[in-house]
Length: 259
Image 1 (cartoon, helix red, strand yellow):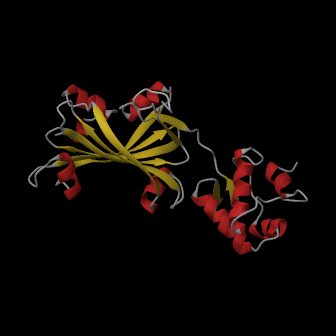
Image 2 (cartoon, rainbow, N blue to C red):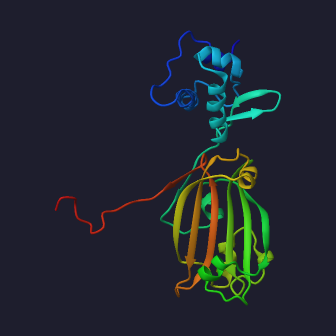
């Protein structure tokens, strides 16, 4: 029996969405087929030669569409085997209105998570860390970096910097940085976050098991104690195909529009 990909790409007429370069038309058509389940994770795509003949395009155009989908994590290429629809990880919703740790956030969803330590140590502060954390050149900064994983899927890379006076022994952190800070009365009570879309560099893409250039969310967070002192400066990278950030918005003065 032919699989879904054979059936889909074997139809007599393929109607590509109109508008834009040909490679983008093919890219959008394959994306739509994946999203509506016409081709499923693990299904193999036809070879470049067969697909080019099927859609009446050059192999260069087909290759460009496929390469874009590989970079975005929709497709995956296996050397010597072919191109396949990539596994589609479950998406995680995270509120932007609550200051919680990754471990706490995932526990509320009943998701089993673990971390792999990438770095834990005391270092001379960078100029950015010196300014943000209010340090002097003679102070030390504690840096902790972790790869956050749910099941077998890496979700995010977190890189936090704190004054060594707040975190003198980074090796003592257990599963949660915030739980550790709470023991010494240094858990942050508020934070300012800035979020922007970035393309993953080779190093972070390898850690997150996606292709270099794949879409991601870069979050920079500055967290404060009740006294107003900056306690944490964190830069995190989240996989764009696994996270949805949700915020509740209210009208500023509580009045209805037009009044």
